[in-house]
Length: 312
Length: 262
Image (tube, rainbow over all chains, first blue to last red; front, top):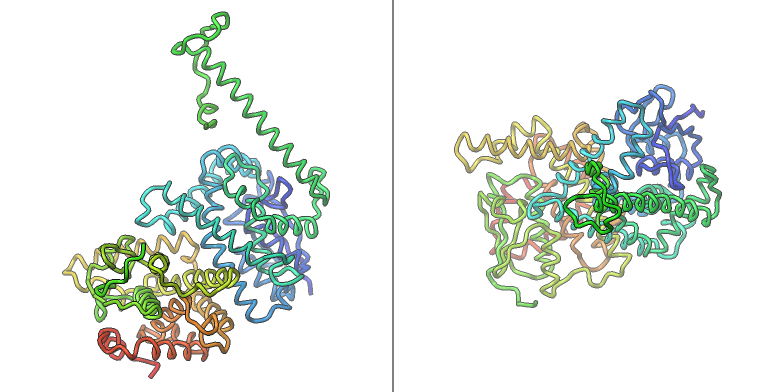
């Protein structure tokens, strides 16, 4: 009795099927349990997302939060936790709570609040996936919601400024990653040889940190020092998501090449901006001219955004 | 760092009979249980403005020597720095599990308690508003409780609990108790022979839920469905709280509320 099920979610990039942690969780769970979902990624169409993604539509039922979606799939007999003992089921719930409390704030911060990351990567990417004029409003709204959530849950006294809160949440996130790494050990998945709900959630949270190329990457660097978690993400990507987007094939080398390409593009962009800034400095009347021959009186009003995006 | 634990260590919370609410009582009891388990004596002092005295705005907080530390997490670390720890015997994987379960309790049980106290209109009108502002004269008592309610509702909205109905919240509590019950199984404590901070936290919340009279009994019924959890609470109460006659404030208060464990 398979009613056709459609999942709407954000698309992916950098070798991931989706950039949004909750969408990734649901997609991973569907793959693990063998549920036949047709995945619609939001692209430049007018079917604007009403409310939060991911959204599952099956006949007339519309379900919107990951936990509820997973419950629905389980009721339709697509259960990835079939072999788990009761205690392991309890552990799943506990670890998911740990992820939401300790890792999610730092993830939200890296994506939506860290100024460089937000302006150069997150906002353009999400804006390119939504139709105009919603693209002007929705990324900003998601960023404000993320900031609100972090400040309300973590920002009480004695942490009075955003920088102190940031320090605390990154510390918590690094500790959480260490705990996950210790729990995973050398096993392939968290509970034996088949992936379960917990693997879906961990993958959903870790993969964006691992794969997306941001300018400010302290969490990614910490994650890369935990090789078993990196291996865990790569395994799930190669075994369950055989992506062919941008020539990606199930080989780690290609992922690295795609990443290297993107990184090179970013570096080239930055070096172009540095050259522009140098030109600015030379043309600026306040600074003593370095090469008298190149002194020109320019408008001096190049937009200041390249200057602010580059930070030491 | 190790100054010995002084004799006059004090734990501050709100007034037990008239003012303290379910969630604060649970947190305070958890800290008291933890300190009892470490064999560290502490006096419980009730003050109407305990929330405002606390460095983080949350009760309980302890005043030891010339330091003030609030909330269970920082208190556990502070006590560890003084050389007492309950979780040293655990290996790395068990420590990870313990932290995960503590987050589960905070994430689900504590949030459910806050929801019930501040977002369920009937409970708010009849229990929370009268109790929260009771030491203060009108109109301060109303202003303070509306302010707190607004704060808690904002937080619920940010984490997505504002859209939940009471039934869904009780479902979540049931799921959480089910998980705790499965994890406890037939063992005396969560990590077999010795209690840890997780046992203190779970005891604090479950015992308070079981012994606090609310509008309906639905919340305590959810916990009572799991007999190993009620046995766990009784065991810890007998072992760590009944021998201490001088700590009469806690025992007397509990017997004045309808105690469902006796």
